[in-house]
Length: 151
Image (cartoon, rainbow, N blue to C red; front, side, top):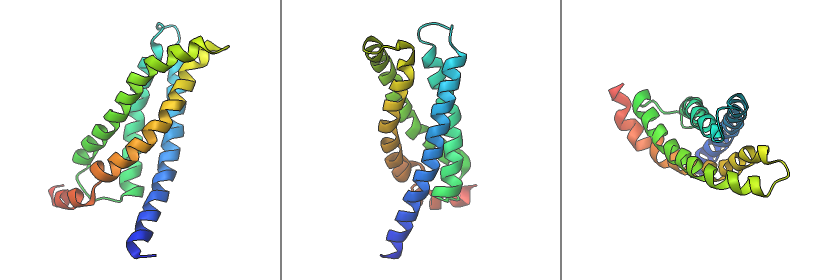
C-alpha cells in the first residue's frame, strides 16, 4: 500500500469510530429528549430532533477535528463548515421524519415507537452523506492549510 492509501484507510477507520460513537450518542440523545418532551404535542419528536442534532454536531466536530482529520485550521471556520454539512443532513432528517413517522405509525402495532424507528432509518442515510461532506468540505486539507495561519 502507498503511504497516502495507508493514511486514507487510517482516516476512514478513525471516522467510523468517531462516527459510530457520535451516531450512538446523537440517537440516544434524541431518544432521551423525545421521551422527555412527551406531552408537548404530536410533533414533540421534532423538538427533540433539532436540539439533539445541534448538540451532536458540536460533539462530532471536536472528534473529527482532533482525532480523524487532525486539522489545525481555525475552529470557528471549520465549525461553521461542519454545521453546513450537518445542516444538510439535518434537513434530510427534518423532512424525512414527518414523512416516515406517520407511515410507520399506521403500519405498527406500537405506533409510539415510530419516531425511534424513523430516526434510525434516516441515520443510515445521513451517515454516508455526512462522511462525504466532511471529507470534501468541512475538513478539506487544502482549505485547512490556507486558514492555518489565520487562527
